[in-house]
Length: 139
Image (cartoon, rainbow, N blue to C red):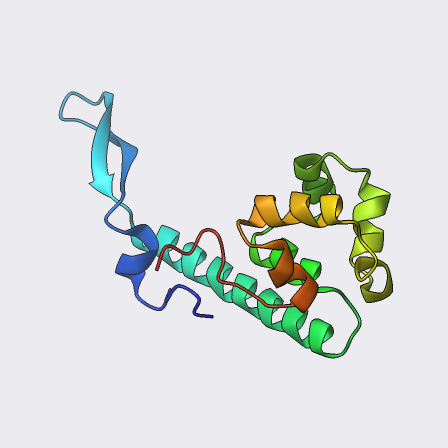
């Protein structure tokens, strides 16, 4: 699986423009369209580094048998248990239990299908523990 390359500032902002306020010659504020400036690029780059670090930590936990592969999909898609519960229409406590391998391995086909549809993967990917590319990664 390849993560997006966020080492280049251009990849992060992809030429996005922002609107800033500036004082014109009359001393009045006006909106000025401009390309995203350096601090935005730095913050985005740092955020992606943190996300990638969390994804790597999740993979380590899966390999150690401490969490189910559902943890990877949740972390990689920047979700927490509350958000995942909302998207799948389940109580948060159930989602927390589904992160445990011994519980996850006994999930019904219907529950696996909910997770699979959300993450745009097959239920088989979940049951086999295959970690597919992220849904926001269009590469």
